Image 1 (cartoon, helix red, strand yellow):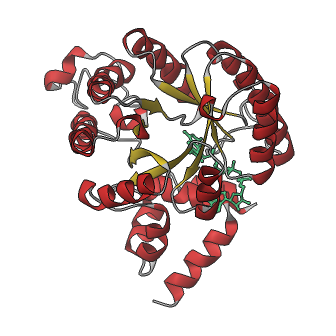
Image 2 (spheres, helix red, strand yellow):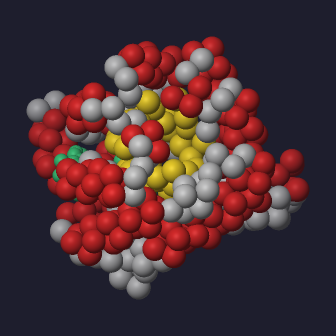
Length: 325
Ligand code: FAD
């Protein structure tokens, strides 16, 4: 019951101001966000890789409102890649990006609000084109240091654009990954299309507030769809990335991989930083590829609220930490 309310709040500016200013927030945010700067996240990357894990790094941010913010997002990733180059971990440290942070959701970046051409963005009549132009150099720089980028899945209205950008990027960088969400009715078809040789596909349950016209609302239905999608990916020719903390789905993945004759390096598990950390180590010790989605940066509000929505107990912890400050 609480999940949808928290997800609605994740889009409210008033709540953003309240949560960001509340005493005690930082303590809870720190559980899910690995730091504010590249300097803070680098030791966490080194520690994870030292323990036999891999990482995908997310510079938090989404739903920007200006073209300049989209360039800043691109530059933040390019700066990160510069640091990763020095660390030399190759694909053990990849990146996840949200296209809304690269300008995808801007209505018309070709003009400013008063109708004037908006500088260099004037060449991009749509947010879709701006996002593609911003993400391409990031994917290119990642490839140059031997690593990859995965396009996160945001709310359902953004997905046609995300898949089109994914397809476009894969022409030059076939290792570019994307995410599919089992709560959406469309996803089994997407999985069939994507389960082709060379593709990297992360499957997750889905973290946004979606209407009943496009998505299952019942947890059991979402889980059943996840298993159907897993089967498609495991029996296909691509590289499945299993983004879940759910012990049942992890066991089912192992069984389906065995039946499909996949070796341990022909798929990977992915979990979020700060959630079920012991399980990260257990799966890695069993010989699995285990990648930790490690979010960092200052614009953590949307990401943080989705983590609260996933587990109402987190909200209790959050409430307590505010009250005791
Ligand atoms: P659940 O049934 O929700 O959880 C299983 C168990 O995991 C819970 O019982 C609990 O013990 C633990 N757990 C799960 N969430 C939390 C939490 N927040 N706090 C504490 N414990 C928790 N969603 C998108 O829509 N788009 C994306 O691009 C995307 N990328 C993701 C990348 C990765 C690597 C992962 C792991 C998730 C991603 N998600 C994304 C989020 C995903 O859609 C789910 O919302 C989230 O993973 C919770 O679902 P679950 O499969 O872990 O199962």
